[in-house]
Length: 382
Image 1 (spheres, helix red, strand yellow):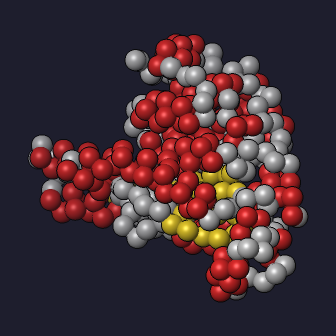
Image 2 (image 1 turned 180 degrees about the vertical axis):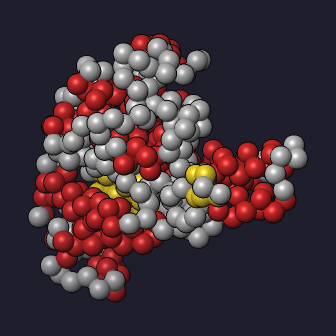
């Protein structure tokens, strides 16, 4: 596999690099490993945020996948800032800059250590655009793995999510609920690992990046906790082999048409308006001209279909139950709303991926018919 390791061969194959090779042997690698591609596995896992608390374990599953593919997977870490925790404090000033720190740090490690490919394991709002920007700037075979959405909480028979905590505070101040009820909602709103459950920034960016083609099918809607996400992470580690063998790079996937697919899905789902801010930066990293006028044009042409929080009723776990984001994409593709010929990280086109996917569950009420949209145009107004 020597021709797939054009970057790592700088340090593994050059006899004038004995110190580098000695240090790689210290990791437990042997001479046979030196002929394999090196895959950087960038985890934004840390203990201080439910969106990220499980990502280091998922990175180990990704590594298992690389090993099954006879690649050398090497895990490294970078930072994250929780918007949910920092919001309303001076700490929120650090959230958006963290996106660029994440991008810079991932690029630094991959370039500095001569890795041939990159798999990122991300979970919160700024992780995903930061990781994708690094992938685009590096332009080496890459896959993004989203840590998944959190399960809903429950209080007195009512589903909870992160916004329930804000709402409970308002109800307490208004005298509608007791202090004990307020505290109970806070304790139950976020039951474990995973990103905020509605169509907030994390789920919005994950869904859009899947539509863009830079994540495996079902990556954005598979729950954070459970066997599906573990197996999917392993698959990502194995799938990078195909990208290496065929030299499929982010620049082969991210272009004008795939960006239009991503923004179209955001408009259909009523996704976070933060996506505009992030996709401007992503397009710039991809060297693809994409302006505010392009966002507005797509929004004006696209019906808003998804009854999802914060504006609607349902959560990402409910989307998962009706077929996941791929089923939504299949519905849009069949309606002529997406470019099906865009390449993805599976090595297949979007249309080829979706041909293997089940349609939206019969009778589901989350994604409205195009003929009866929630709104005839999108929610983005710039």
